[in-house]
Image 1 (cartoon, protein in one colour):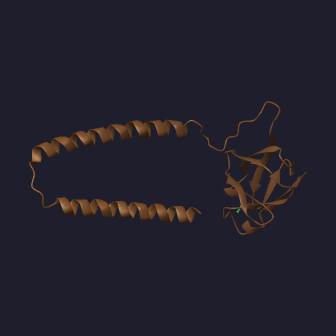
Image 2 (tube, protein in one colour):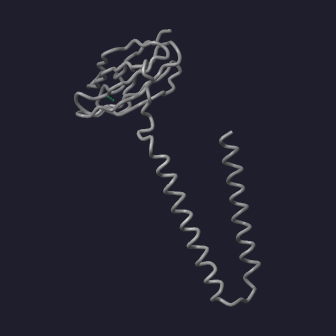
Image 3 (cartoon, protein in one colour):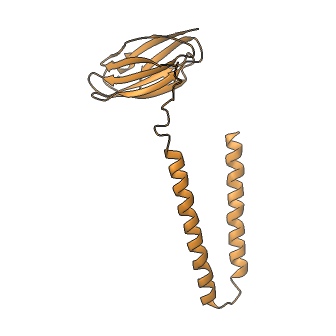
Length: 174
Ligand code: CUA
């Protein structure tokens, strides 16, 4: 679907460029006074620039107002479960590893030693969310598990010889 849209859009713009070239080639033989043309298109340019500035400023303000994007807004009766996660060579220390379907969870992720990557995977090993685990920083991951099952935590940052052993499990129940 996305590929089809990309294709059609590309073809449309290719066609547009072709039309522009054709018009330029077709008009190139015409002789005209330069001054009025210059005046007209300088005006057009000013108009185009103004529209662009207004449009881009509005779009920028509109899209930035919800930063950070992943920050959820909780209802009054919906306090998230906060889980402290600490990465270390070579394992994960988590204050809680069992959750319920539909309950909002906040992973507060940090590291005891070097940089690690905190990645949450489902049973088919599709990555659902990730963040960096960094010493002296706490990064947050917001998750609500939709399905019960066993989820895997893998380290996503090469952190030493046993990096590949740096895994943990999360259990989600109904
Ligand atoms: Cu920790 Cu790789």
